[in-house]
Image (cartoon, rainbow, N blue to C red; front, side, top):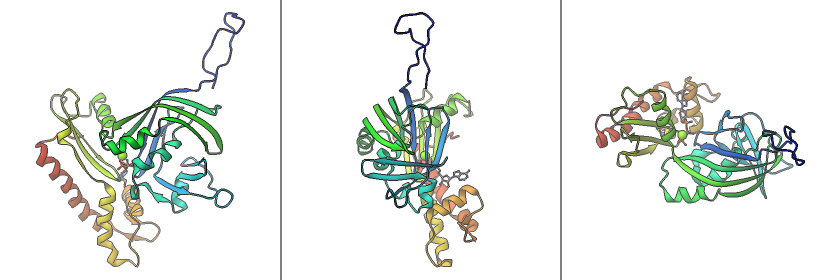
Amino acid sequence: MITSRMASPLGLPNEQTPTLDLKRQIVVFDGGNRALKWIDPDHQPRIIPAFIKSFEPGFDDPTPDDHSIVISTGNDHFCLGAVARDMKGTPVFQDNKCELAKKLVLAALEPHSGNSAVTIDRLVIALPNSRNSTDLADLKQIEGTHQFTRNGQRITAVVHHVQPIDETQAAYSFAMKRDLYRSKRQLNGVLDLGGGTGIGRLYSVGGSLIREADAILPGTYDLARRISARITPQLVNSPDLSQIMDGIERQDFTLGTSGVQFQDAFDLCREQWLSDRLCRKNSKVGKLNFF
Ligand SMILES: Nc1ncnc2c1ncn2[C@@H]1O[C@H](COP(=O)(O)OP(=O)(O)OP(=O)(O)O)[C@@H](O)[C@H]1O
Ligand SMILES: [Mg+2]
């Protein structure tokens, strides 16, 4: 992308010399258990299903689309997103998203249009607990140079610094900025019910995270597991947990294309699942002001 004007090599004023904009100061990535999310070079949010599937080049090559990314790095060939789900790939919630992050993040390491190289100053990655040393070690491995093919384009990406961020932090900052809390003069909190983890966090009036009030519990996959246990006796095979979570999200509470309805099981399990979470929080911190 041609973005800046520089003095010409001859030093003539006002002459335009195109320069390639290789630099991205900040890239943000939330490699969730249910959805992979990032902001692209045009500042647009991208959200694709959190599935990964290896493939054999020349045999079962996937085609990239708006919700699918195809990556080759060395001898490792895999796709992410809708095509990985359709090819019966692995849902990220069945794995460890921090261990997988070095693969998943390649979706977000995208140069400006027209370039094949990018230098990223700060790669901000959301994770459930930014102090977990094993997770931090996994994420730190992303710093350095990556050479890979993304959707058929050869890319060289240099990541200078990986900055882990607690998953609730962005929601808290957003809520404060938009005045979403009833009061800013008391403790405020964020309840992030993700696919893999359900996180409850409190922030002081000054905006500091109160670590001793943290609650990190299983996310909606745990709700899906409870629903699965209730409906399995009526089925031939145990249901796919991803399909249960999809049905909740669509709010039709239907299992894939089978026509099986699980609304009653959902209503029952949701109450138990939510009360487990709220009891745990209330026992630690008393009255809360979540948004
Ligand atoms: N509009 C909706 N109504 C009801 N449930 C929804 C809706 N949107 C998403 N969900 C449910 O919320 C769950 C969590 O989605 P989310 O994208 O927050 O997970 P994630 O960030 O990928 O997971 P994690 O943070 O654990 O890594 C999904 O399983 C989905 O079933
Ligand atoms: Mg999340």
